[in-house]
Image (cartoon, rainbow, N blue to C red; front, side, top):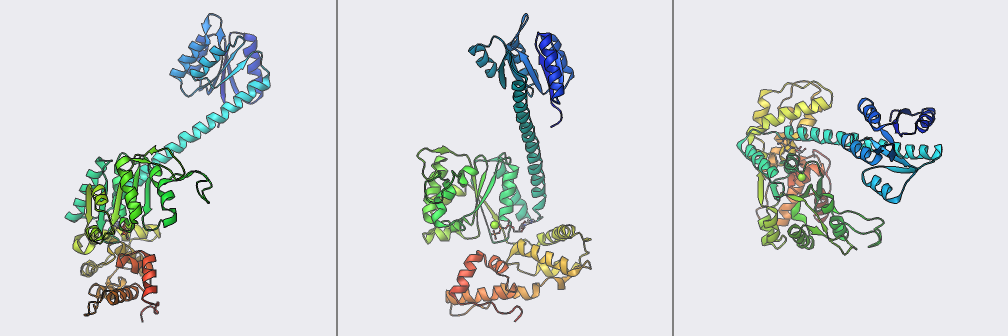
Length: 460
Ligand SMILES: Nc1ncnc2c1ncn2[C@@H]1O[C@H](COP(=O)(O)OP(=O)(O)OP(=O)(O)O)[C@@H](O)[C@H]1O
Ligand SMILES: [Mg+2]
């Protein structure tokens, strides 16, 4: 903080002179005035941070001046001084916004301590304002980036964006987003949040399958310090964290049934009780959930509550797989090529006109994510020359779209076969294989263990 500008307003000239001298010696910029009029004139001309104000000036009431200053210059802090301080006046001064009160006669050290305390407070306040400004700038940037980042010219994507915009205009309505893995469900969820009036609050993304059973309740509802071993501090849960914002529940199909029941109650009541607490807290959130499963099927299998689906899918957005909207491939390819080149500090390579035709014949089991990863790899390997079909390993992969299915129709055998194929096609990259299969990486690892699948050397 730059030098603090202090104005001393007291009808005793001797006091203002002496104090001014002391403050200047202490490194402050000091101004003095002996009447209200004089003081207000200085306030008009100088960027005063702090006013030291006498409660009783001859013929004037310091409290009236305090009131006027607080209305005209709300950022100026005021320390009141008086020889006649009765309790009521002190209380009234504080109520009107004074930051401190000193009784005359005071020692220089007392006023200095009070000024320094106020200076610290002003410094923090200014830092906070700066942070808030920076914050809103960041979220504005993010908002712009996100909106421009959802690429697609197909009627299906236009419709997705259309419903997303409607959803952003109804910030209390729950939205369910379905679509295969890598189609951009989380992207759309963020677009809805950042285009809605909830945008200045948190977008809290939770992977429903990643929350361990034992911590489930405390993760979602929060807990009170000491309510169980390990609860070392009070903690907010996801519901409270998303207050005024958006709770994004990814992989909703993996949500355990006991949590589904609790979720239903919270959605209805919009109130939660932290673990170990007795009182309820009101929470205001909107839920956007996403899944790449068919929820109806899970309802039939009694793995998902029908009443919860009804609560979650007031608005439903389905993002079709990339193979059903081939016209989006070219703009996505151009966008990713430009984006990666910029990030890698390389010139954007020209694109062979045959490439888009080849890509359009491919099924993209990993959808946009797969195209994005392929483009990144191609940009790195092509070293700036023209991008062509050879840079995109779709020929090998396209076989994966018509897997060799065991005619015995044994589910487990076919599942194991599909996993082997996916691992082979993605060069043993388990994350990519899991994406293409539409399951979590951990689920893939479990299944590999179950079927005793080891990683064969790539390109066997
Ligand atoms: N239309 C699009 N425009 C630009 N980028 C996209 C588009 N669709 C998807 N992406 C990108 O593809 C990647 C995958 O998207 P996202 O994570 O939103 O998919 P998802 O449907 O949530 O997948 P999963 O079910 O596996 O979680 C992200 O990097 C995202 O930015
Ligand atoms: Mg996702």
